[in-house]
Image 1 (cartoon, rainbow, N blue to C red):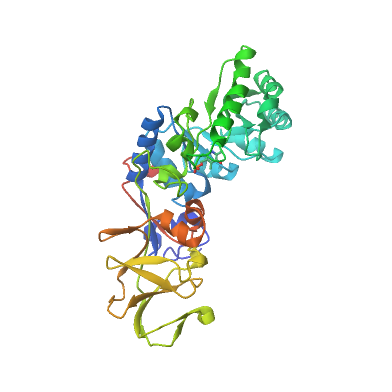
Image 2 (spheres, rainbow, N blue to C red):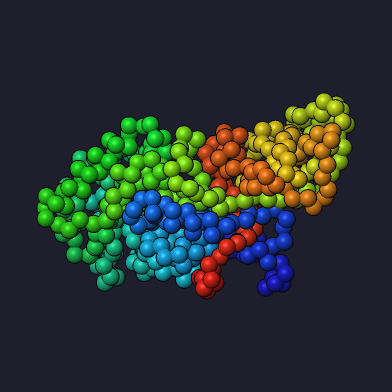
Length: 398
Ligand SMILES: *Cc1c(COP(=O)(O)O)cnc(C)c1O
């Protein structure tokens, strides 16, 4: 038994409790911002939101985010993996949860035992779900996945007729939803989205053709909600927008969203680097003149990208300063210039506001040559999460 003062750092849940981890590097999650974004997206779409909380709620913390959304009255959550659904159930989250990934036959019984909704993406998978449901004596709640252009999982929309008929006539499956996924909705100018919508609507009309009740039709991800109101149908599935982050630099802020995540650290070392000396591995950065440099205790071992070497910026005392040299596994260096000053323990903001300025997740993604999704989901369990703006009455679920 480890002493209680030594949190188990291999257990992500332990590091989510700020009191269990005094590390000055931390992620601050504003749950109130997530609640605001949920309400704003739902009002904009005009239909219920399925809150997408896969990949540790895009780095924000699966259970605290899901519990907060449940307290805010959300009616449906979506995850990628059955393991994520199980974690929600173990934590006491009771709202309906759809697992959106493809299923593996040996896992189907876990869906049924934990009351998770299954994505059925072919007739063969439907038969696997039926077999598991029959042997456990519990009907499965399923959403049918139709492929309209992503070529990931799902029955091609032109072949959806037989698939829909098989599902509707199944004794062991209740068809709650039918859905597809948009490939290009983050770009408001892409013609692909309207083509995908047409294919999806054609497939859905098969329910009318056979006289079966229409299940919940859902298609729009964040880009769909932001740019293509006609894709909102009966329910929408925003992920990144729930966290107040735009999917792509081409996206338009048609809904007023608030970024929920800040990534902060503290100066752990201060020094003067003399002209001609180099900084960090590979000696890729050379001081042109004497300059003041601070060290910040976070690195790629936390998921802060190494591609920000000599490219990223941080805020110290309300001013922007460049990262110099390579980002190390646990630390990196920042150039304050000849006139800059900072003391040990000064706050360093990597993502979020400080003073009158702010560094957005979107800007970090551009500097790192990637997308905001990868920045957020890359921030790993070594960084403690701290929650502000928690709704009252959800403590039991977190
Ligand atoms: C991840 C995902 C979403 C959410 O996508 P965002 O771009 O983050 O809004 C919606 N639907 C499916 C099937 C997904 O895999």
